[in-house]
Image (cartoon, rainbow, N blue to C red; front, side):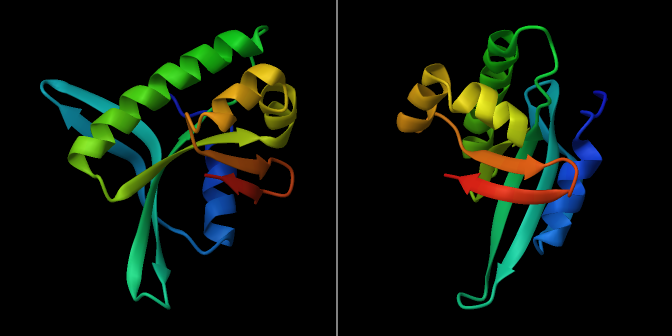
Length: 138
């Protein structure tokens, strides 16, 4: 079992405040002989459609000395999880959860803007102090 990210509980609380039901506190993806662990699985009832929206959330703290190194690692993990979820649980939408400071530092930078413009990943930006979701970036 992998160690939980420092923001794991913060993101869980933020999702619950936003009326998400946490269905998996470590969503296990089995492929072949390997188990991979996405930090959270959640669902929300969409009243108008009487249907469930399901997400998977990978949480990253970007605390190393190199935010680009953190970005490279997070992207690799995101792509791997995205591709496996597409085959195993295609109804789930994968999000990368990052704190507001990381969003400003990395994704408002030209490198991060390229990733967002090319729709390489979906972001969930949270406030780690208030434990709330600030924005969903599809």
